[in-house]
Length: 355
Image (cartoon, rainbow, N blue to C red):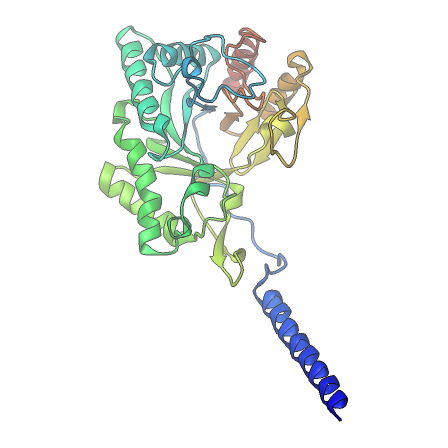
């Protein structure tokens, strides 16, 4: 009888465990990402853009004399003392960008939480002031908000669905433009540019967060911004029991959007922006899950992509990147290539403007 009792007890426990597991799997299924339904494409832009505009991503986190961000470089700056602490380095880079025909330096910003962000930005503005006084016409400066910086933040600061979270989101943008006087701000149709990197950190967001940025930016700076989102911001991201999910029933609208990946895909024609790149190499970077290598082909890969970009008849052209030397996607003056890619850029940018 005792043996029978224990058998029944074991069976009951197994049955209860089975029920619990069934409930857990049911909840996971309930709260998991919904399959993509048929949904409308997000709008490209509120209005067609009349002006031709060329932008490139300026990574200013380097301080080679102190060994900051000098590890795992594929390519190397021509200036062996490149540093965000040195206005002269910024002067030379901005002059080279002007030579390449680039209108806007998308300053890759990691918020105040990174030491280089504010110091480097101030020196970039200082460098531009000096160049203007010398009669030069360097590119203006715009915010490229690198959302990788948010990966270090606590979850409550990555939830832009709350009042507190929305305020944190806006504060990063406000901190940047507090350092960039209006005469140095790059604009599209008179509006300062906010360029968002991909939502790869599962930031919880919907249209209310974007609208919060629009309204508060206008209150603070007396002008409405021009927001360009990466395509991973096209739909709201909401919280679920385990993590988050994309709500494809809730599109997000901004002035424009684009797709990241021009450096390794060659050409990305998404939204109202066409993105191009010269090649890519992350084979040597530790802990990269998806190593990629795209051969530059002595510049012909880049030229081919620029030709494709011109044929799209888009008004916005983004070059990925100006100087991301870790990933080998740079077109800046380098020890490896000299000014070869600056010259290629200038040649096709001139054609882009005439199209």
